[in-house]
Amino acid sequence: MRIIATAGHVDHGKSSLVQALTGTDPDRWEEEKRRGLTIDLGFAFTQIAVQQIGFIDVPGHVRFLRNMLAGIGGIDACMFVVAANEGWKPQTEEHLRILDALGITQGVIVLTKTDLVDADALALTLDSVGHHVRSTFLEAAPVVQVSIHDSATLDTLRNTISDLIASLPPVINTHRPRIWVDRSFAAKGSGTVITGTLTGSSLSVGDELLVQPTNIVVKVRGIQSNGVSLDKLEAGNRCALNLTGIDHLDINRGDVLVVAGQWLGTNKFDASLKVLESIEHAVSKRGSYMMYVGSREIKVVLHTIGSTSIQNGETGFIRVVLPDMIPLVPGDRFILRESGRDETIGGGELLDIQPTLRSSKARPNKEILRLIAERGWVQLQQLHLLAGRNVDISEVEQALDGWVTTNNNLAEVSKEVMALIDTSKDLGVDVASLSVYQRLVLPTLTNVTVREGRARGADANDVASHPMVKQFADAGCTPPDSASTDKAIVRQLVQRGLLVHCDELYFHSSAIDTAITAARQLLVANPQGFTVAQFREHLGVSRKYALPLINHLDTTGFTRRRDDVRIAGAKL
Image 1 (cartoon, helix red, strand yellow):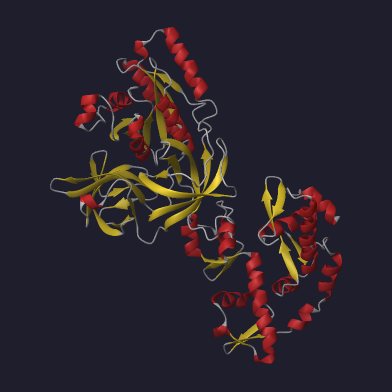
Image 2 (cartoon, rainbow, N blue to C red):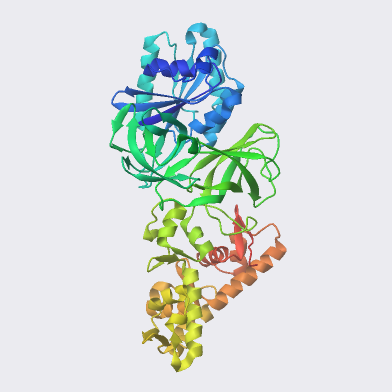
């Protein structure tokens, strides 16, 4: 099943369109039918060609925007509705900006009520729609003109939807199911029932789940999808789950169902935020903010990262503090609104679900090496949870007995161990007295032997006096090609801290000191930052040597990249 949500201004015919396509009236409440106005989420199903499709009908009125936001998390595409007789309206614009900010990439534009306008008025509406969707994900979307009273136009829309569904990427299986609850009720004779969209992995009757953030354990008693009872449901489907172990009043819209142990709960994360151009002010920590992620509405505290504010139309970074622990992953999308102004601020993407640095020092992204570098040592299973996916060993620099770390950190800990061994002389170091990380590096130290629980050096002094040390020291910032050196000796010299691994090259530790001094001098002369070319010229070396050195300074915190220049890092 693929999930399509409607979007568009109030009374532009979204619900009528869904009913015409599916035969199901998505308006569930008597008040909705009486007022002709969708208030809450509606759901309907149909089959087009061979594909099962679930429609989520969202309210178009601004007063029910929170309900609209609860319905569009986890959709595959949108059916963007504009009435030909009314044209582009304020909520049309806001819905488009919200979908764009959520990273929705696929959709079809539907002009409804075309039977109510003449050709000239229809052409004007088409031009207006084309203008408004320019530079958005709908810029190249197909446009279908529809009247619900004309079956031929509905057939054209069905064919267009079929083509759209065929172009969608396959449903991603992360082997970790998650359901954001959008409805909860008590079914007569069955008990508690929730509805939502299953993502990540399959679910079966009898599976045990954890409700977040309340941490209530429940069991799946029954599964329905598209009105059919199932023993097992695959990811990507709308579903209703009959749950045992919980009252329907204790699970609500915005709660999350996951498998215990497969997710990290978080009440603080770092994210990117793209601020809408349409707002007339910058975004800062001052304000009362509501965040919408999945089907959940949350009052949050916001801190900007790297600057005091983010201007309208710009993308920046924020740290968000939540009142509860909820299961999130990097890549989750969200919408941010400001309560005081009652306006949508923008949207963004989660980058780090458990940041370790203060917001003033954080530089969030989704890179695996950053996650590891900021933590020093991470258990591989924990890294999978932090990344929100199974990380391949090829993506990390060092993997040791279920732990991962960086080359730099391995070298630092190796240096610590060698210093302890050198100090111990012939007595050696009691392995039990070493830290977990120090014990992990012992097998990598080729000039160390471990016997009877004690680690001793094996000709360590010979390594330090090896002619290669002088060769690299004399070469300065233009070291010899590592392919022409003895790799075993190089590895030992790195472990001793005499050589430093920078990208594909190895530099003597004194060359690193030279590079740090050069960066410091360049920043005195160029307070706004210096380029790689300036760094290269200052050192008098080619780009081949300058780039690994400046990358090393970035990694170790002496410098930091901003656009095309380097500025001072935390250690400089």
